[in-house]
Amino acid sequence: MKILVINSGSSSLKYQLFDMDSGKVLAKGGCERIGAGGSVTHKVPGRDNYTIEIDLPSHDKALEVVFELLTDKVHGVIADVSEIDAVGHRVAHGGEKYKKSSLVDIELINYLETIIPINPLHGPPAIKGMKACLKLLPSTPQAAVFDTSFYANMKPSRYIYALPYEFYSEDKIRRYGFHGTSHRYVSQKTAEILGKPLSSLKMVTCHLGNGSSITAVDGGVAIDTSMGFTPQEGIEMGTRSGSIDPTVVPYIMKLKNLTPDQMSDILNKQSGILGVTGVSNDFRNCLAAAKEGNERAQLALDILANGIKKYIGSYMAEMNGLDVLVFTAGIGENQCEIRRMVCENMEGLGIKIDNDKNENFERGIPVEISAADSKVKVWIVPTDEEYMIALDTQKLV
Ligand code: AMP
Image (cartoon, rainbow, N blue to C red):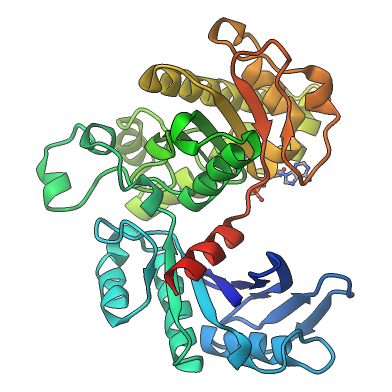
């Protein structure tokens, strides 16, 4: 079975074609600058990358170009699009209705349109991607895999904010949680590696990238998570502030005479590691600056490490223990420094890493970095959201 996974952004569209029998990626790539020019980079394992500049006025056109590349005599990997058995779409938000991955139909698209007000950035491009696929591959089954659905079993006490209740009941303001597909993948993969049933494990999974979130997974069920109504809540991120005292927001708005959009821009695009350092949103640059003695860069690292530590501690309290701590995504998989800072002085809670294993690890594969006498196992597990989407799609069709 061949499954195409689509991740559609406002001006981009990423794709991966999987052969599910072998679990291998046949081809992958991305369309950029949709609606404002256009380019496509197409990658086939074992071949040189192929990049073209081409006008991409819409997501429909981008997808047409992707299909041409996948079936191209020189650059393609299939003879005809009819070889694609199903399409899986990454969808950030399933609202309160879609609690698991579902087949795409008009009812699903109509519902996603109704929740655009609470998902204004990611909703419209995901809908465009689904509509484009329905138009170009009308008889191929399609699935939507939601980032929020992993959090469908959280208790109300974990997702209701202590605001007047009507903001939840009428306006749907609540914690939804994000990055669920990544947290679900790494928690399942970790149980598989350990050879233990997922239902027997208490885990904290740390997805640390440009956007970061931490999830408590108890017996395979996400019981709490750091991101909330939007991917803004939680720990310090590349350009997002993470959680702050809510009163700071109206205070700054009054002080600087800002509109809600301007304030939102500050919280989402000018804060986090970028805001604190004034140097860069990229962790690598922040670390390099800290090593050169930049105090604000060191401060940004300390804020991040302490924020992660606090979530781990609070989730251990919520689950009454911890078996495995997992690091994943760009920073979690690649940056030994942050893992060291987070796990430092945690012996009292049974967490101890082996510094040699933490620093000299092979990238791109799961690696255990806990010390032999650590009660809690600590692992680096590379995430693979696309493969998780392909697996869900395969199950559904
Ligand atoms: P992501 O959003 O998962 O792509 O992660 C982006 C963040 O991960 C950036 O802050 C990068 O500095 C960091 N990162 C990604 N890849 C690497 C790498 N190979 N080595 C070190 N840091 C990395």
